[in-house]
Length: 489
Image (cartoon, rainbow, N blue to C red; front, side, top):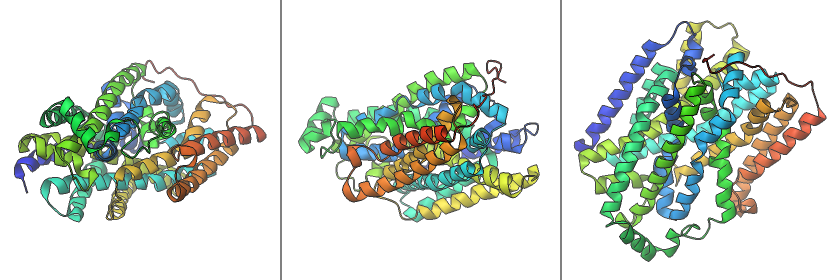
């Protein structure tokens, strides 16, 4: 074990634990355990909002799986990844003020709280909870795998041992600190991600002898690596364009991102977060994926592409600096997995346990159940991650597509269309989830349907079904609540 590399990471983990303990003590009794544990009492400003959105979205997929895919596929994957640039902008533009106002009026703590109040349907709630639990377990497993790969690359400990260390580290500070711990650590981790990305990108370019040498070497390896179409020409214009739905506009429907649009303080914080978030996402996504491509000639023959970032950092940086820089992907993974843990936990506790099992549960009972469920979910994710996939980015993107197919139109139409109703929402969710899973297996067997990503067809089908069923079973127009967000109401 290289202690020069490992020591900075240990310092980082200790710092995260301290923040978790501090956050636990900061919990507000006045706002109630649920509101504070799952939303941090809705008191976060623009910088914290931007950083928690970016850090939650930037994950093992962005910092390990994405660069690993870029290492294999080339510049085509960099172009595809940049469709994520508008993520924060779209989320806060589409949800933004209206979602925050409605969520406050409903006293909604989760996305499912909003759906429950908007559609007044038990079926919508249970379908939503089912979707979150099923698809987010896939996303969490991807993060667990990424964390284990990173620790394994740095320490030489076995994959299972590394997986255990990562699981314990995350569970301790999330279970103790709740959403406040997640958001505050996200801000710290987001800064580490940006600085680490820029340092590592510069180091890789220098190690490769400059950009001209790197491009020449890539061309010698495979001329397709420097084209938009990928190493084997499989990245067609239709397929790349469809990624704008998956990791661009569609991100608005990811529950772990949407819940952040409930947690900010006022309109000024939201506007500031749009600017900061767009700049930070652009820097991270471009930087990390370029590192993946540029690493190909500098460090050829990497067998597990998901390990390219830790391996290239150890190759081109002094050990002590590599340890500091590699806290960036560890930060990305932990900042995503903590949010996913809390989201699945809140779906089980708030949306199932409290709504339908024990509506009169005390704060103490809720606290015990919340922390217990969070711990159990983490353990289940550990078990799922024991046999990792070949490229973890595909596991993460599978979860993204499933959640977007389920939630996009019930959320957006529920906010903006007064004739949206429970029948349309139920039909849309069933169509979205069912067609997504069916097309996913079709694509695995026969290739991409219509040459686009799996999520594309389900998103359009679920929209059509939503509108048709809402109009067939038309109900009284819905009256949206109004409230002034400029005063942080």
